[in-house]
Image: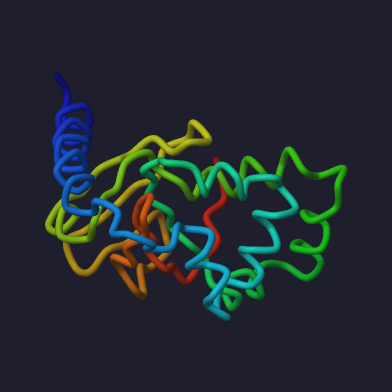
Length: 163
């Protein structure tokens, strides 16, 4: 077994623990509800709607979402967001958004001190570095562990692009 497989196994085992630790409370909002109620995620919420992913992110999950802020989307080249929101670019938008989602509920304490690659819902890997804070690829987690009824949201300062 290679290092990546071992670390991914460790992460997934930890995710199972987190799922129990993040058990839904009565009436606790889901990922979409939380993102919709936070003004910093308005572009993400619009993109999730345009991609038709709201029902998926409202489902039982659990999911870990690395959620870019409006400022992260604004840092993309001019016209990128507007182009991605066009119906003819839906597949590309779905790929980008699903690259921000990892199966399971993983909290920052489970990532602390680790370096690993984790496969996203999109199918590509994100590289997580939890040695000094938490970084995902080149994005910094600026607010960790926003607990939802169906997973965890980590606010990030960059939009992740699949390779």
